[in-house]
Image 1 (tube, rainbow, N blue to C red):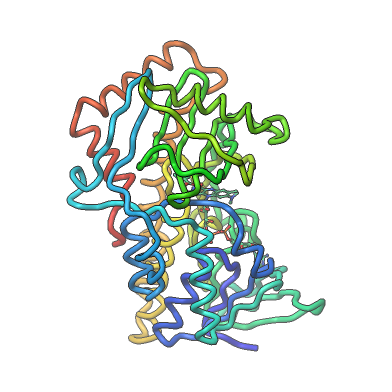
Image 2 (image 1 turned 180 degrees about the vertical axis):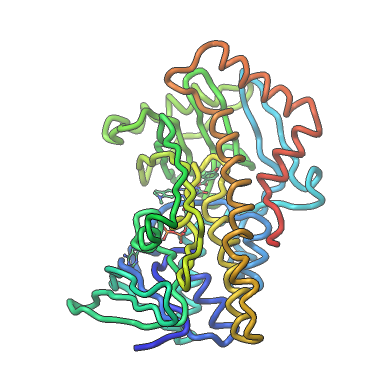
Length: 390
Ligand code: RFL
Ligand code: PHB
């Protein structure tokens, strides 16, 4: 079998690429290791930047998002029994964010592409990619118990951090920059209306906490916990008590409700360069991971894909490889900005196990600065709401 573009991985990056190429009349085959139900239910990110919404609209994949997505014009920072609202549009010339879960983006893209007859193959595990530096790369995969091959003009690794694409880059070409943070997040989903209209990022001597949401009826909350934490050590009551303590603010109360999911996620920063080798391109988590504090993971995946789809279309329509040649550098500029911002948010808001009182004073000073300086607040807001895709 041959296709123009072989897409490895059916997370948001792979599905969005399949969608954009389909709309441009370029054929692709997407190979996803898991089954459709698993991919549609994997609980992950919840915040879409303005530019991600723009790309989804351009892909004609935002119909439900435009009805059900919750537009947010601010976030709250909380520390020391104080609260400060960062007004996103006022500080960024009108940019805002949407609360619309990754699960919903994925469901919408799968439904649209299936209805359009696009080639999405689930339970197809890619084993290896050969000939990335030749004119005709070959993807080897297993499907329905059989070994299969797919040849292509381009192969795009959208297979996440643990996928095969990243390690297909030869060792003498590839460089991975990495930092593992000394804490994790315990994330819960609860059937209770959010206790706040906007997200709350809380610094506390007991560690970081985040109040987010999935809908007007469903809250999503996170607590900083030590690496290696077992969610079974956190019965529901203990979680609510700890959230209460970390969000403490006079006159504010957190409403409790039935917890429907509980999981622990590690915090890692990682970038692999370059994001291209020959006819192999990396996109999304396959190329970079950010800790979730800046809400950037899914948005970076979408901006990589917007840049790549435009480059592939340029090559197909005009024969020029200029944009493909620029792909890695174009994406890495945005990636490193997001890495910096995600690290800044993470280290400003979390308590490092080795943190001194001096370090804590620096964090408080930084938060005070954001609350008192429009310049500091604008820097946070423009990073959080995200830059336009170049
Ligand atoms: P994904 O979503 O990981 O999708 C990769 C897909 O590739 C498939 N795959 C393969 N398919 C075929 N053959 C192989 N050999 C394959 N190996 C892997 C996988 O099954 C999967 O379907 O990457 P993508 O598309 O780049 O999207 C990126 C986002 O998913 C990610 O950046 C964010 O979700 C990050 N992230 C979060 N970001 C936030 O902003 N807020 C969050 O709350 C948040 N929570 C999370 C997260 C990432 C997590 N992971 C990756 C550990 C929670 C978790 C648990
Ligand atoms: C989420 O709703 O899952 C979420 C929101 C903001 C973040 C991280 C996760 O920074």
